[in-house]
Image (tube, rainbow, N blue to C red; front, top):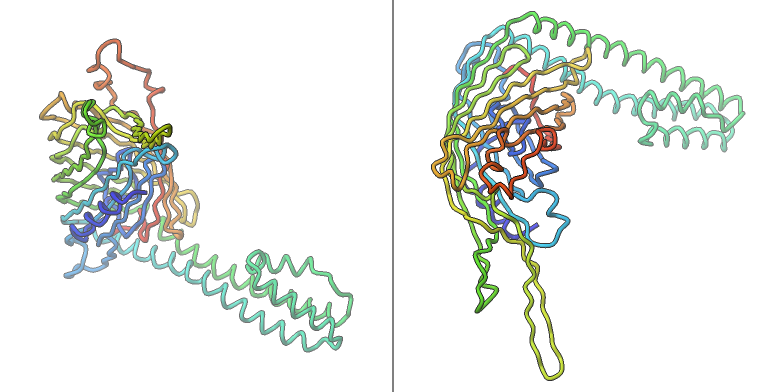
Length: 450
């Protein structure tokens, strides 16, 4: 991208090893709900990437020094471009930006459901570990069986064909699973040699026996998961987390001041802006529903209301009858610019809906409100609020969350109403909706009770 982005990333990492704010987000990348685990996230429409870590992935089952109630802490670092993905395909400079944010607080929860989810986590991990170990063991065992059965074939050509093809199928990504391998064996008919066919039937029988053992063990583990899930649904699990949070943010861009007639290149200036925030938050969970509320003091700027312009700076040198012209494309922002202090309110509700009996896949629905209030200078930044809803698919075993959010910015059209009547562009709400695609690879789970 840009050397400035790299510099900002280094600056924010040096600030301290801080932590993760959440898996869901809105168009500004913020959420009031804390999620456990380390994660790497990306927002396709915002051209940004984030990294977070925290200590929320604990699974206490007894009341001791590391038990149910404990100190929580974490950090999140994000870098990207304020211009979003569109500017990647246009000429000019990006607007590098980033922030570092940490939180510190305390968490309380009841005890019984932690035991329930300790069991649920254990059985789900057993399923994943069994699947991984099974893939390795069945291929190793069948490889030995193939070698042994090949010895029963007297024809050297049939023996070589048998051993070569079946071992290749075990190693082939398309047929190496037990299900695909059995289907391959059923359709395999490259030799009519009686000993070849007999050896093949033995491998088919042993493969089916292996599959039967796998299905019985998997069924037993999945039944345990369902039982623990039903226990949790009947249990009145609750958790409360109180925390304070804060951080710094930084951005760089080129600003157009005014035309400098003596030296046109002097019409532009580089702006390196720094801001920060400090606030309080509370999260409450009851069953599969989480509620989050944060309120903070924020020192920021009004970059988002500046007007973007594309400029071409031409310089020419004439020598005799020849002229050499040099062109430089410049992306710059014009308008009244300055720092301003505001207060922010974030409110989220997240409900999780399981999509299968094994509790491996979930849909998270996240309606939210984002508000900016008590602007110290409304000529720079108005008081506004946004509303939106996110929809995220979460596969527990894959530790991946991806989805879409839909947002209505500046619900009351405060920004447009502030403009001159001839410049206003007040549109119906449906035509002002913004959309975003996000993904996050996480080592934690939304539903784990910790």
